[in-house]
Amino acid sequence: MQYKWVALSNTTIGILMSSLDTNIVLIALPTIASSLRGMNALDVLWVLLGYQLVVASVLVNFGRLSDIFGRVRLYKMGFAIFTIGSGLCSISQTGAELIGFRLIQAVGAGFLFSNSAAIVTDAFPPEERGSALGINQISIVVGSVLGLILGGVLTSLIGWSSIFWVNLPIGTFATLWAHFRLKEISSPSHSRKQIDLAGNLTFAGALVTALLALTLYAIVGISLLVTLELLSLSAIFFVLFFFEEGRVADPMFDLSLFRNRIFSVGNETIFLNALSRGSFTLVMVFYLQGPIMHFTPLQAGIFLVPLSVALSIMGPISGTLSDRYGQRLFVVIGLTLSTIGFLIMTNIGGVLSFYSLIIPLVLIGAGMGIFASPNRASIMSAAPPERRGLASGISTTLVNVGNTLSIGIAFILMGSSIPRSALDSIFAGTSSGLLTGSLTEFVHSVHIVFIASAVMLILSIMLYLTFANKKMWEHAVVS
Image (cartoon, rainbow, N blue to C red; front, side, top):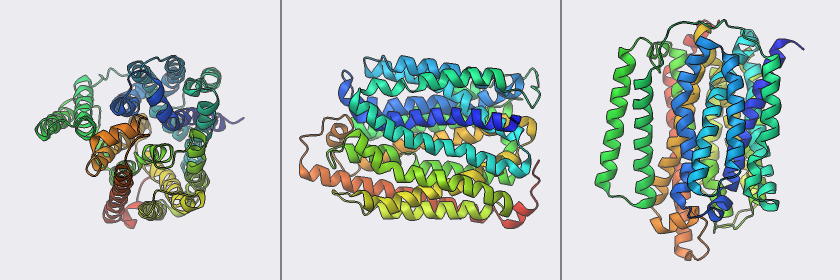
């Protein structure tokens, strides 16, 4: 087997495992919330947010470490850490334990995410990268589908702990395969570059304080003054972060990469796209399994499958076509289809059929698939070969930051139209006694979230069309 196929298949398994874990946890969250001792809505959120915060905070420096010491070496380490974290999650007895063990998982995921695209980009020639990354991205959707269905089956038949057992055989096999078959294509630099500790701390501080402000205000009901103080502290951390990045020799975010217009616009667009869709599956899982529809985990998973299937079909098709005809058109088409899907979702009510969800979910999923491959290919090709680990880390960090902030923003929007006590009951799995009025308000709050998602995508399209002009793409140097 040619090495490029070894690299593609192994990294695809890595992305599959992490994607599987994301959706398998999401579909089981309502059951987890009602099963673990003393768990409330805030704990439920931080099972997700804690994981995403760690991934977002470490990705770029893990990418830098990989450029220095070798992508394959740290990629293999990521597989092992993620697998160990999964085993620990399965024996959690409290919400705090589960959150803590998820942080271990997140460190492993950081190594996987920061290196997979760079390993594939190294292994494939420029004219095949879009197709390769498109296939690579299929695993996200396959993992999403398997996570939704498998999570529903395991949670319903065995219990929530079993959802973490799935990663153990996959992770063990993939770790061994990576150890024996993957090799370094780009020579590690072995330079004396330093890790930007101050940049990491200020970046993490900015994200943590922003998310604490959003989630505590939406769920706990802290005062507006305290919320503004936390947001102000977050802004100060961000200012210090950018000051630090412009001062140090080896910054966490190498801002010089953003001088390349293709790299800059691609990352700005990918961030807004993540900000629009990051909360979608979480909101729908509790909409379907909560007091509105009363679905089982398996039923909820089946209802959400069309989105993942559409994404898995359109991802590789878009990657192949964009290699031939250019990325720009497909990025815009993908964002437009997702926008239409979110607008249709604003009409969902208290009674849903599988067929009423097919069209909007297919549009959202197809749009994501069409957008992802050409956009990621343009970002990676715009980066110099010796800095692709760093570029991949920056891009994936922005996706994770967008996904994380999306959840916080969604809860702020929902909290603006439903009492906090009702919102906490719904997401803590204790909503069986809610009044009809509160349920109506919850449906309305979900509509507001979907409207906001559509607005973000429209802004993304406008930004892309304004700055990603055709001439720029035609004269781009792809190396």
